[in-house]
Image (cartoon, rainbow, N blue to C red; front, side):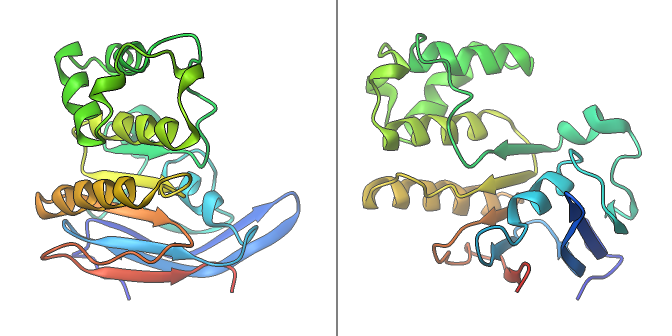
Length: 212
């Protein structure tokens, strides 16, 4: 169920990719502190839904709003300032640059001071790898770096595609702690994952089955 009081919401959304209907009639609603867990089979449309929420894909039907207004009212850039997006892989990392250099590149791109980068690395316990080129990182370490990039932006909404990929138990717990802190501070998240997610303190977990 959604309501006009919900900050980020969608009503009866349909998605068509390559001439194929992935899902239809899907509605969601998020308020500060809330988490939506997208579940469903591979190819059901979870990533497509995240991209729709980011404004990168159009909806075939239905509509999305932010605080009661069309979510792209201020353009793609205006909406981009409200969210951080985590892709399902880490291919956007620059392999010849260090972990810190990778983060500083994105900080500069977003107009964020470089001084914020060490703290983001420390959240995922990879500050000790700040001078290590990305090509020498393990798959799990690369994922932790991609998550640190999400933490860089001070935004209300996280759109996360398979954040647990490659994470060991300790790294899994670090991410869940960061998600909990984000939501406890008034943030929101949409998480596409096959892994179970516990609701954050004071928040709500809305499980959405996509394409099922």
